[in-house]
Image (cartoon, rainbow, N blue to C red; front, side, top):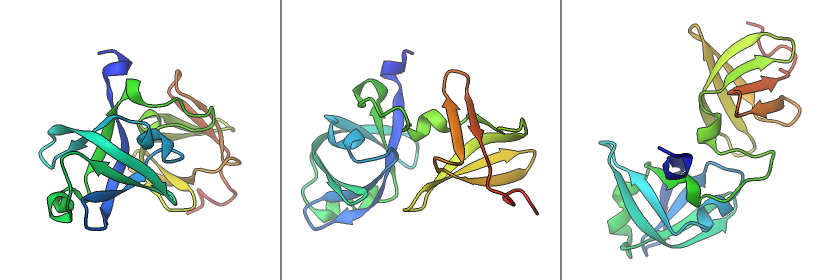
Length: 173
């Protein structure tokens, strides 16, 4: 499968918005543009089935996106979608600035410090509102790393690697 045909996790439906079937979405990229430029999205059902929906509109609303999908036009039709993940075809996504990444590109990266200590695999990302937090696991140990410019030194997607400089005391137990 070529990367242009791959579906990529781009957000999660947080809540409904109003009574006309709109959805409030947490985008898993730096801003709303990754969703607002799409013609269609896929929503993953609880059984794992991906269902495609045409995008009627997608507008930035603070750090969220207000998404309207066809064929929904009232709140009762979209209540069951709250909490579900939204995906898009990789080829349909806009290019991000060099210092931003789609979550799906970061998940699975091996994370190490600038001193050469291996911290483990990036297995999850927590959206906190101010900055994301990377969840890195190795041998049953979990490290939470703030996604800040002075902490994340480099991301090399081709090598599958992230290098970080941890704040003093972060690994102290």
